[in-house]
Length: 265
Image 1 (cartoon, rainbow, N blue to C red):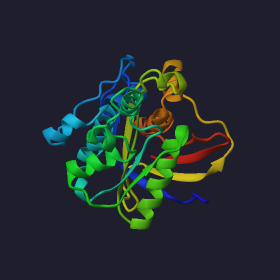
Image 2 (cartoon, rainbow, N blue to C red; image 1 turned 180 degrees about the vertical axis):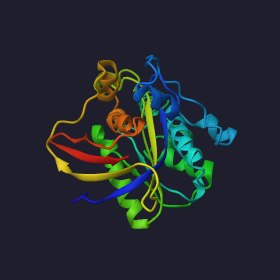
Image 3 (tube, helix red, strand yellow; image 1 turned 90 degrees about the horizontal axis):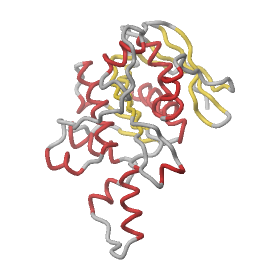
Image 4 (cartoon, rainbow, N blue to C red; image 1 turned 90 degrees about the vertical axis):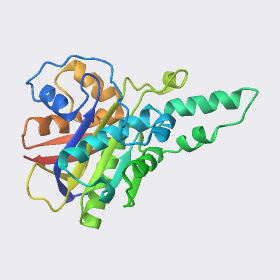
């Protein structure tokens, strides 16, 4: 598969992670304007959902919806008209844990809410409920390469449709004992509103696949976030965006394959 030439302007962003609850907060840290104060990620409640649905969703869906909503609102876009790509390495681990507990107990009945939240497209479904979106929606999962896989899918979809696409990448820690087998240090989400036709704003372009080492963060504490949360593998790209700089970053993809991405500020 060739990714060369796929590009789009970044119209807006949304970010939620350790020590920051929005893109402006993350941008100030990544640009070096504000010291980073590490703190556990605070996952907000998505006001965009009706109260009944809001009570049914877990932290993973809340995380995805709030990051996506920030990007849409920042651009003044109509969420109901946007195609979307949702990318997550593991989906809702807490819900998976609850189902496993139920199946291991005496009463093995699973509630309908647990069941429909167990599928990996739950965030996309709730996004449709919240926004009334009927446009194309794709869900991808590629373990630690989910960010790169989502970026490839979103840019390919944007060019195929010749219209903007919202990419939302998100991950949340697993509870024990699942966490012992799959350690995700904290919650993190980033959303990019990608517009292939826009001329203003920074433009992201895919290069080719490569075997070069992935770019790291200079700050060891921030690098620990990047390396321990799959969705945070995009921090080097976010740093370029925060500093309004052109450059190239190498992102994790598969075990023996990385993705070369360039940014024109």
